[in-house]
Image 1 (cartoon, rainbow, N blue to C red):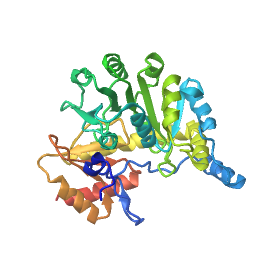
Image 2 (spheres, rainbow, N blue to C red):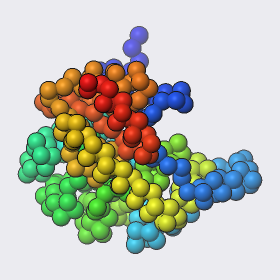
Image 3 (tube, one colour):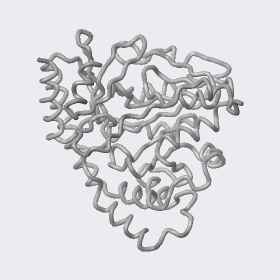
Image 4 (cartoon, rainbow, N blue to C red):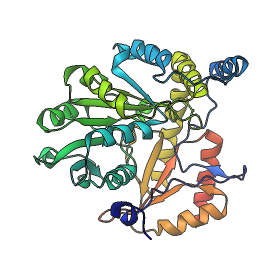
Length: 349
């Protein structure tokens, strides 16, 4: 007997990047930060452990909301916390998009968006990027059943970013809320926080997995105007952020000097990685994230990926119908990047 909704039976499951448990792998496939988090994070976690874990955490994570509000120049009731930014995406989708209604996003982009639409039984409405990764006016074309638009900015897999002024124009023309997914924004040259104050339809999602090196903690948050946050609070799980994650995330965003130092190192390595990949004949877009997107139609990049894996170097091989296949390569430490480049050279001989 089949107990599941038809859309669940029909959908494909989201496939995360490989997570090998063998330490000797050089892992450049899931855009984790290659550096350890701020030392303040360890101290914050130890404080929670010393106090015991017998009580439920604060359901709203108010200590984090206050600190994030100060950082972004808003009030705490503009912040919603989640178990990673994926939880934020899920809450927003569940709250705004119903069965057979429509949610829109650029293509290609973060593949979880389609999964969330499938879970809702909603219509997935992908709008193709131009070949230069710009986004045209069709993104804002009207549809009566359009309930949510999402733009990853910077985008994955391309690492490209749409300027905030264009995001603002999209929001003005769209008939629905616009969620700007800024998971990688700590490595970018601009952000859209100011747009949240200017337009009630604009929401910004943030993650501590990338810039703050806390992928294992699972913590993200949303910045939106209070009437939206109030309603999203109805949809989230009762205690969706645990006490250790709340403490770690609050300590992390307080250490601005750590973030600045880490960012400087990652951006310098990113520049060198792009230059070296271009030197060996790969086509690489300029990146605003902590990864790069490399293509080369004359190469079998699936074979390159497999050969790298045999040498215990992991990158992400991705193919999108209508687009060239490519390798998404996380920016590691200088030593990790050098090892990857050496291995890549061996596959190109």
